[in-house]
Length: 102
Image (tube, rainbow, N blue to C red; front, side):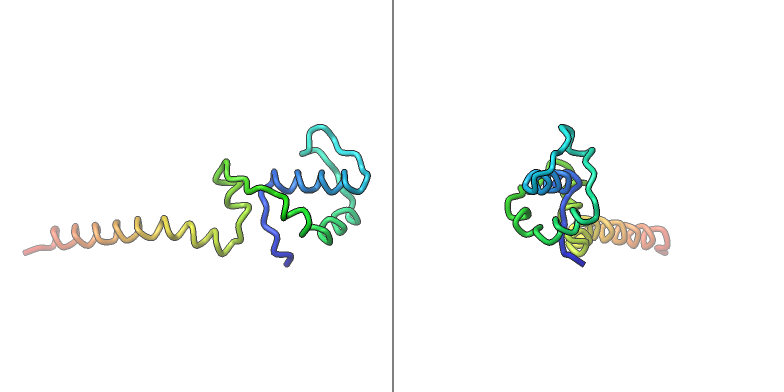
């Protein structure tokens, strides 16, 4: 509903930035923070100012796919999968024709 797509590392980084900006303390290990619902709602309200400053994390495939919309994930996957499926289909037709040749 919010049209926000980030990797897990980006979410933890943005959450800690928001907490520090509001005067809250964060842990040294950013993955172990806790937020109340009111803090999450405040972050969602101000998320536009934090998304502009974030860098795209493309170190891993998982981080890349977490950071893009689901429709784009399908597009990227099908761009790689379609040629393979087409190749195997043509190869299967060739084998079928070779086996059933008179």
